[in-house]
Length: 496
Image (cartoon, rainbow, N blue to C red):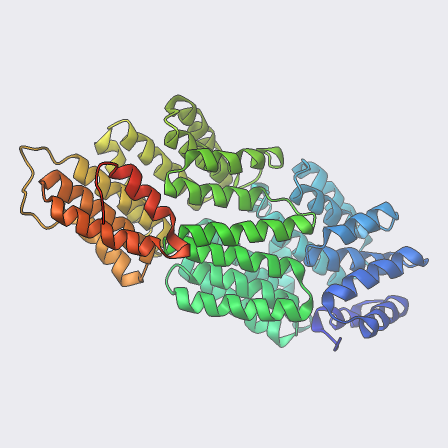
């Protein structure tokens, strides 16, 4: 492999022995993934110093190579400096590591660091991963404030601004501030490229795509393709696996839910092969099935997630919300209410605006199911208002589809205008939303709702005409689920 800034930037801050080991292994390796495995073999087979062992752990965690971390741990090659990274890896894989355990390990590691550069190197990788699981990071501000001051005043530490931007991006993400999130990722990308940290570039491309997809699906797809090309070049298997996750998200917000599920299943298979937990991707698959209305399949995927997650994780609320939705789809509303209460509690504890929005949506769906229409409308409108400045199309899809269903349901035989073109303002907004964003699956769902309105108006020829269009769309492999919705919603209508 060619010299890579991810590795070579460490040389000036390492002792001669460690630098020679990193240099020689880099020269032997085919790519970064191969380098990580060769470095592990080297430190496990030789008597090496703690800093070389630390880098073996660091690069393995940075690339999510948990197999390498297991090998290092089995060989007794985890120096005190790297202990927080091992605890973080255990936590990411579902083992309960308390905040106090993590903090004490981190304090010991920082004291063992040979210099400030290495201490910051360790701390920022740890923190950029820990913030996704530990809400305590939000109030543990002194360390990050101290590091931020050092980085901003010392040119030799400029590279670390990329990680500070990355961490800042997370804060914007859980706060629902997508525009600001994209801006700081762009700043981080500039620095990551300047210092040739290609592994960080690959991660930032995916994070940027994840945020940008809400406003520009095409640009997000281009970023994902760039991340895929770079990840393949690096031999970054975890990055390659999560490409499928991001493609699945994009297809999901377009309403192409069969394709979304297929991509997520590919992601799950890939991360399983890396000995990584699948709880998060299982929960996303459950969400896709819930949107289809298949509570049985949604429950099948979300239930295993609870085996490897615990209540301190920020996104656990999302899993409970999806389980509640699945139970609603199965008409098990009493159980759904219990799950929803757990979701609310955890969302509040997490400090995540995104999590709170999901609880509101599922609560709205529950209210709609129980014919508490006014309450459901209020909840869906509240979510829509909260994302006016930073649109989240997936949440808009769900809210608008439900609002149109309520709009049609509330039309009584006495009040309905049989000549009306639409059921009201929500149907118009849904159709405009689908058209403006070019969401084919959402557009097809809107046609099904329009057919429901036409049936209520007694305009049966138009019902069949609309359903023909939906079934034509359902011939696409990405949207086969539409046929099932048509059959279940219009069991007595024969469409030829």
